[in-house]
Each structure stands twice: as structure tokens, then as C-alpha cells.
Image (tube, rainbow, N blue to C red; front, side, top):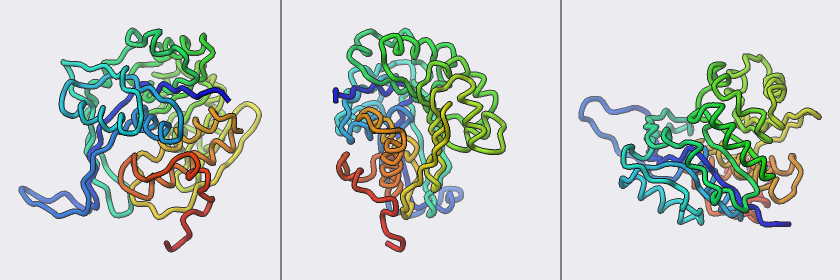
Length: 313
């Protein structure tokens, strides 16, 4: 098996997470919490760090600011072995960041700054970035628009590189039309169930995924929260269950699934086996705070059974 070299391109975010938060104190009030944590995140950044932990060689590509937030983001990615050479620094925009108050049930609202993510263009994608690469994962094609995203993905496919994408935007038909030009250039599309239903207007997840396949996507791997993932391509449909976990924080679970799924594919596994790895890693991440929660590698992720951890743990 040849080395898997992945470019995680697009949205890179510095997350600041606080838990547990039941309400925002009024006026100048304060509240004590159990944890405050800072992590590398985003549909490219979060996927990059998990892929690296699972043994892939990963290059992050995108735009961040020249601020302290950018310094922290670079350090966090490098800590997990991600090559940050191709993260371009912009003087004119801050590093994208989010503040996430995590509720006791693991859900959370978000306060977000788009920042430098909006400045990345196809002109920033060099031949050197794509040299030797086996997979390009585009996080947030909506920041580019369909035609510009398609330009990047087409360049990758011309080199024989496998392509995938995930989106940050909520499910909306307008968003789908905005990125529609990129869909035929995608071997894999990795939205969540709410996005699929919102994009397509379908009442049923399988029907929504099939509508995306009809728009040109090779395979849709849609996450379904605690129900796992649904894989749909022209040949059929396959449901893969989630692991059972006591949820602490859902931040980064979709990116963890993407990373596990793409790593499995890069190892030559079937789509079902790859999705099981994705669900296992997503379960690990859901058990703690932030997209980088957990101490694991490919071997330990592979050892996670479908009912890990046992109910009541």
C-alpha cells in the first residue's frame, strides 16, 4: 500500500470552547465553569489533525491571519504532525475563530468570525502543494463558490488525485446551487443529514443523497449523529451504525468522521469499513471537549467496538 498523502484545504478555525454553559450571565455577571480549551478546528483543520493522528501524511492548505490566533493554530496543527507550510498568512484579515459555549448535553451555539478563510482562491493552489498527493479534501467549498472550487478539484483529478468535500453552511437550496459546479468533481461528498435534507428539499435522507449523486457526486457519505452514517452511490445504499458513547461535546465529530472515512479509503478498505472507522473516531471525539479530544491512533481506533463504551460507563 502506497503512502496516503492528503491535502486538507480550505476552512481552518481556532476554536475556544467553554463547558458546561447553561446560560450567558446577564450584564457584567460571571460564572465558574469546568473547562476552557483551545483547539485547531474547521472542516479542513479539524479533519487534518485527525487524519494525521490516524497515520496519514497531511498538508494543511488555506489562509490564516498574522495574528496570535494564527500562531496558536499553527502550533496546534504542528503538534499533531500536520505540515502547515501551505497555510498562507494574511496581514489584512484575522485568523478565523469560534467561541463555543458547550451545553451539558454536548450541543452548542457558536460565535464565529470567517476571517482569512474568505480570502483563499484557486491562485493560491500551487503545483508544489499537489505534488505527490493522493487525496484532496476541500473543507468549505461554499467559501470559494462552485466554479472556483471546481477549478481546484479538476486540477486535482487531472493528476489522478481522489477528491472529497464537506460543507459548513446550514442546509439551504441556495447553498447547494452556489456550490453546484463543484459536485461533478467530487468522488466523495460528506455532509450531515440536516444539510442533505435542506439542500435537496427531500423528506427522506436516502432520497436526498440520491439527488446529490444525480448532480454528479460519486458517493455521498452523510452523517446522522447518533445513528451513524448513510452511504449512497449509483450502485446502492449502505447504513453504518455509530458507536455508543456518552456525549460530552459534538464539536468536531463530523470532521472526525470525515478523517476516519478518508483514512480507511486510503488504506484500501471498503466504503463500509472506512465508514466504520469514521464512526469510531467520531465517537472518541464526542467523549470529550473539542475536535482534538482523545489519545488514539489507527490501531486503537480500529479496536473500538460498535458499542464502545459500554452503556452506563
